Image (cartoon, rainbow, N blue to C red; front, side):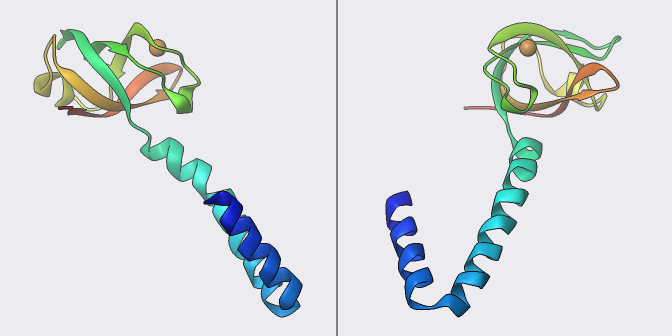
Length: 114
Ligand SMILES: [Cu+2]
């Protein structure tokens, strides 16, 4: 797929200099936009180990979290939204997004996984 794209692009550049300008602008637009979009929307797999409703904390055994550069582990997260600790319970398999907010690892999104 990537090799095909490169060949097509090379052919376009070779045969039509006018179009090559537009193509490279298009390429750089995507290169700049993708990492941001991906990290904001990235979901990681996890399993709820413990929910502390009073402290609004969720202990998750999680898989790799790309945007936090974190390997799989079990750790405590703060829930961004109080409703999150009502929605999940120990033993639930979930998909979630986490970010570091104010120095605390915070779950910004969490949903059941199947
Ligand atoms: Cu972790």
